[in-house]
Length: 138
Image: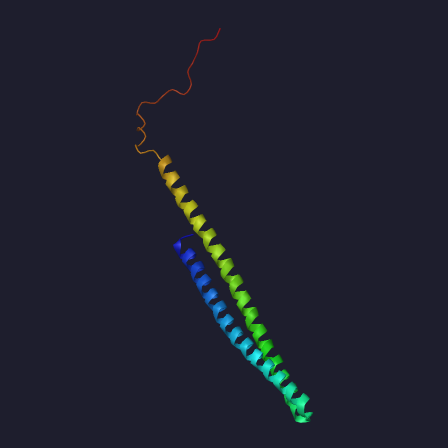
């Protein structure tokens, strides 16, 4: 685990948070459009109440149908935003875990380097040592 994995996880974090921001902007624009359609439908309802004309009622129903379509699209963009935020959070946690593992690996390598002896062990002498010592037994 090197710095490449941590960098890749951070890049995924940035990409998914950027995607979440884009989804937020799209959902916000669609919600504003839906609010405008709602106000337009309310105005058409007031017009129908004054005139009692069937054309105003039909226009109002058409406007509410458009609003429903717009709000469904906004809801899809909001789902994308939530998925982007979730992916960003998960990749950020993953990047932190990878960073900690890299740090631990570096510390273990340093500790192993300190345990190795700095001087070479003495060379074995050419005289053979007796492995078994004979003793007198009675």
